[in-house]
Image 1 (cartoon, one colour):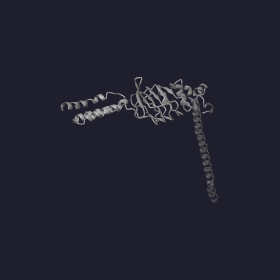
Image 2 (cartoon, rainbow, N blue to C red):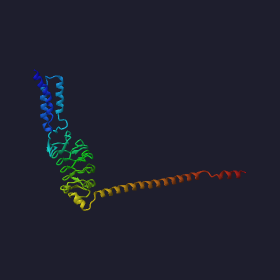
Image 3 (cartoon, rainbow, N blue to C red):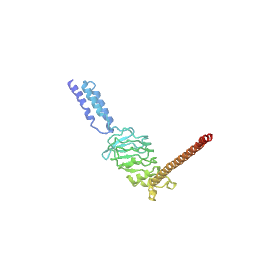
Image 4 (cartoon, rainbow, N blue to C red):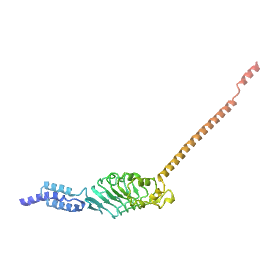
Length: 290
């Protein structure tokens, strides 16, 4: 009896070993082992049950669980989360915090919201190619800008992108095969961001301020001397000039109306004074009577 009790008490201490394994792949095995150990402690005192329950909590992979439909593995000694071709419509919320390589390519993601990867402080590579991304928020990559080394946004539906979302990155960018609208923000990204040289030629103007630029690589258009930022500046200058001219015209009209109104008031006042009886008429009447 004593030996059996000792074995049961020993079984309570064994769960600590079931928590040594790492990674989401072994999470289910760990949980099963801990449940089995908890079952063996059903007849032990309350303290033993409490210890087993505490071990069960430890065995649950809170921080390293793998998102459904994704595969978590090791790549070059670092954690990689592979979610390619899984019909995802948004970025998974339960990506492990220690992920280094994240593949979300060939899905149906349409938007990258603000702070989408902020909790992934170890992230170095993101592959978002071949999705349906149309909108990228300004703070989409906030929190990972410093450590990110590679970002693939090629083959999506991106027409425009806030330059603040990309210019803060040190990562090498792939932006090819998107229906870009060639404008100043895209030109600044091309000039200032770290673009992948092999894909720069595939950044093509799907729409542009002038029809002659449509269908041409952005780099070719810029090499021809086109400056989309100066076009925007000229447009802004014209708008300011029109606004100033409008205000000036309003002031002139106001002054003219004011002068005309005062002149009319003066004329009415003069007519009123002329309509009054002359002051000399009573004096002449008095002298005649004398």
